[in-house]
Length: 302
Image (tube, rainbow, N blue to C red; front, side):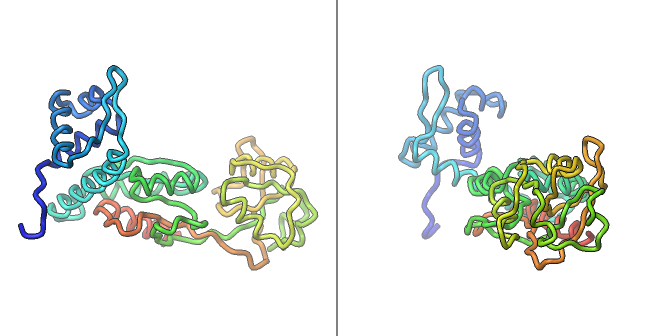
């Protein structure tokens, strides 16, 4: 065909290369693919000959490692195979017949509130899709998206990488978390000035800590720091201070049997956008589109 270079390797050969590269072993790839090791080795050698570059370094008795060219090609090969799968899925027609795999990322502090119900709703709509989940902080989710380990990720929109596209699903307004015996626990609202002199329990996570500190006109009196949402709730219930959080549990009881009170903040403080992120410029698979639509429907009912 005019303008299109001849390519003399197949999707199967690409899949063999990606599997061997990810597992770091021809033997492991052979077990994973249930294909003879010699066939995998020959397929990868054919790809290398066609490209004119070495992609893998074979270490005797120590598996495989990628060359610099191999590292770049692995990213492209994953994307190419993803597009091929999307094309095949599109050709099958009906959305209800969606099959295949979808890798989803989720921010650690959002997962306990939404992930289980989202996965259940998606499974009810698309039972043929197998979903894998990776949890982590925002930077870990960005990396998982950009290197192709996840196709979409549920995160807060806090200083996200510029090469990510986002779909806003909901906004999470901050509130004050107080022990139930606190004088302001039954108030309709509380101001930051009301809390300024009191000890604070800071949810101390990358990027989140900057968001919480930016809320205050002056530096808060941080008594304890924790990276755990539930530990923050427990410390508040124990009377060690108050906290500012964005996600609300379904009840006021903590893991250790304590109680907390949630009070809206009267100040004009910024909310956090909960978004579904994906890589800009990469065409989403039909499975990713279906998951995004499921998320939109889920959050629109809340």
